[in-house]
Length: 293
Image (cartoon, rainbow, N blue to C red; front, top):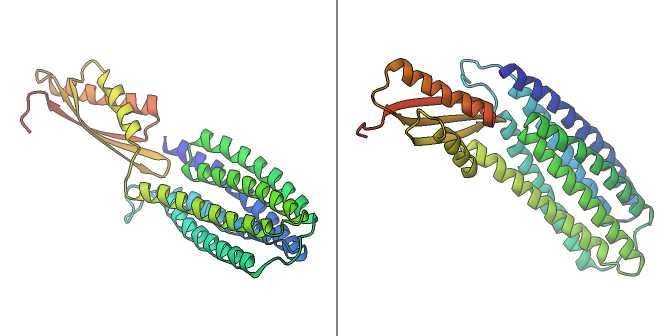
């Protein structure tokens, strides 16, 4: 099981590497053309991609560090490195998003400086197509390997494609004397970067503080309750280690069962959660139904 999960992490590295090269190329192109064509929106979009490059590098580092085996300081392994990398990424995105937003607002207050060159619109359209392709690849990959960090990267790819489309709209609008539309689009890009950074922060913080989806807990409870030998699910908790779910559960069984039968029931619970829900590890505590707590 662990070998398969490590292989999945290695597959996830491909998605991070593709994102890194795409973002490096697009950020350099947008920043250069944005400066030459005097487009605040395209420059903001380029800065957005620059933060995404750093984010993808952090994801790659997290994926590789997560593959380290358990050691004396990390007896449960290094699976949470993915989430630490995501948390680091969110801080960068929030800082850059705020900077882009403030700069765009200042441009609006300073007044029009002429329409940006039309070539910047073509660059924005080209970038949108590229990012949609990267998004499609990473989304399929994240579902295949069940990687939260690659899924987060895919969502970021999608938002980047939408940002580029918005950039094109702002630049074209400026060609029709709507000069305020270009810096306004830049401000909206800044807000989107901030929102994406906040979403990444919330997701990473939830996992690092052992938060878990309550709907999944109920799904686990329902699966266990359907087993014949389980009289009641007394308590159930779950937490994530990267893309690995660990469940702790207390079940009540018929007090007439002997030790071997109770052990077999616990084993059935483990197999049910692993086979039906892809849980990584299950800790089952068995108690007689009439026990006093």
